[in-house]
Length: 109
Length: 157
Image (cartoon, rainbow over all chains, first blue to last red; front, side, top):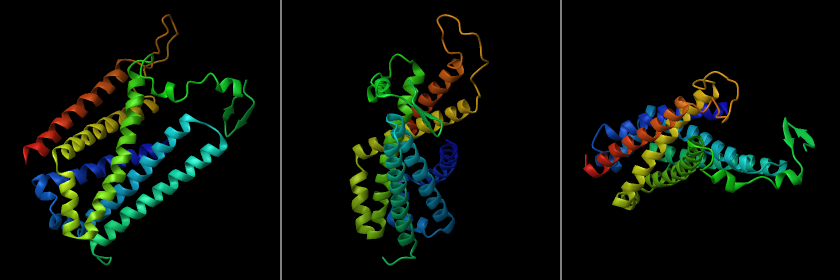
């Protein structure tokens, strides 16, 4: 459970900063394309977004794994659940990182 | 009767498994009091937030399609129903975070009180007012956060 608690507490702080970035100006203005792209060109904010992505993916899919392991216990089920949740976690991190890289301007739009 | 041991877990016979309630027991919020409701809500909000997280990653990927794709996605989410959904996300995330912090303290042994002799009606001493008030604080903070979120989203700030 330690990894679940550490990622949960860390995610709480980075998500709070992420939400505050939406509230330092009128909410609807903060979602304008030019403003969002400007956020993605800000390197510290990109690091923050990537950390949110990794922390929440680990926390969320580990939580799902815990719930599924509570429902049923045998070797095949436990291994299947662990492998599936790790695969889903890697897939969502890869997809989110792709968005960050392209929006940052490092990729080809 | 336990038959064998793997990584410290006791494997039970098929007969023992028949006595288990399975998913029905997991979903039953009655019989065990507020702690059971809290257990249930923590899992439901967690599942809901995981679904939202995956949806949010997909939603923001529209940035890579340029301003047209981004604005089309915003039009889809910036509706009254979209705002109500976001308010639900605010409430569930606040509850999940606050109750999660309570659970971290509980697992560390904080707020459980001292062990005592089990007397009739055998109420668990660990399930005391501190634990119950933690659950109420989580629910109240979630309601306050939802009100604030509603004000920002519908207030046009």
